[in-house]
Length: 116
Image (cartoon, rainbow, N blue to C red; front, side, top):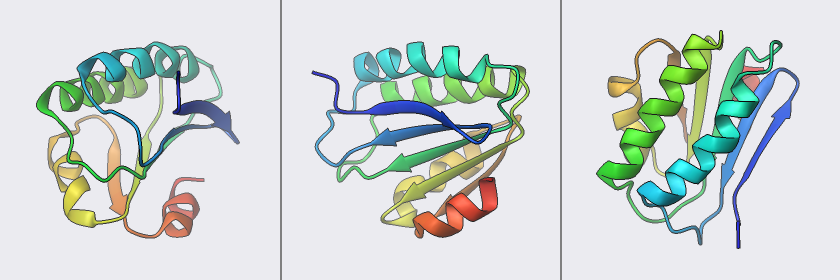
């Protein structure tokens, strides 16, 4: 059963990953299938990821995240805000994502304010 969500809110693709999700490359591929459809919408300008997970990201999943970021940038998105409960879990995104202005936040409202 799918316990994550990909949706569009106000020209922003929102990816919400709950605490109990199993994050691996297979899950990342499934998320990207929906993510690619969403970023392909002509009015999408940014991405907001709500990363509520406890466990660190696997290397396979991180590769899927980079693939998603590249597609979002190619589709015209310019910003990507990532909310994490502990900033250390999101630091790799800021240094490894190219093509999008990427910022990691420990406060969900600040992430939303920056990206919208």
